[in-house]
Length: 436
Image (cartoon, rainbow, N blue to C red; front, side, top):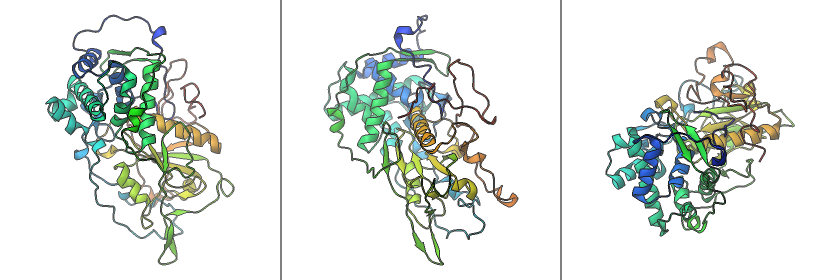
């Protein structure tokens, strides 16, 4: 893993300037992509591009991602993960204001059915005859599973098993798992931009994998239209135009006892300057966590939720208003909270490239919009937020935790300073994430 708030695209070099390297040994990851592409009649560039957006071609030693995705193709098997949201755990008052009583307790929602986007391993096992264990732990089997899924999506669309990558635009969009047309398009566009530019990096097993550039790549967008996905409600969302973002408002209403829920109306930055952006890990699925934000009895709220598989973003509260998200009223009143889909406490060890890209672009957009410095003194993890009193410290949370990658790859290629060192500069321009 490399990057959250500055995703380095240093590794994504055009093939024209890539140095020649010795041929891969039989049985390596590059050959696994080639073999699976041939077996299932998927263009190798498409298979490599999808895998890059999910895992950057890494296998992570068979460990799951934050939303239960496994291997280079991020085959999802979320049935083993449970939970609702990290604000349910412990004694933390997300509002962080001892002068006001705690909001009424609300039971977390019943677990929703796991969406198909988080159960792709089931289908991959059916299509390939591979066991789930092999799909989780064997690189070649996992890549075969991803290729089989892409071919299955292509056939379901009635699209040809063509050598032209552009004909696979709809299948790539389907691979995102998105139900929103904009989210599926965003994922497919990111994959196709990667294919067009080309990429090369050394993977977690020490091998070099290459995606040769395909300049002038076309996108046959009629296949995306045939997916019949729903349009997202936008309603003036505060997001950069280049990412997929929709408006799913948090609930706000008066409650018994002169109370209200479950965020504070404000007029920032007139009433209070926004100085911080807080990074959270949900410890739950995307949709159940969003439902909590729609319950006015629930004692926590946040401005944005970011989905792991495809990087889709839901905004719930306008940045002018104050979410109850950090457990410290001073920080809440001066910050914007971003929740990322994930299950850190249950063993997830990595986050998808798609989510990192969306999160980084959103953070840069918000930082520029509100004058927040792009450094670790102002872009905080929930685990960096102090308790308001010694008695509240124990109840504070530890997300996004040790697997969240804050590291930089500056232009000179040297590693960034450690995460705990203050004022580490997050240079998005050098990382290729310029103002949207």
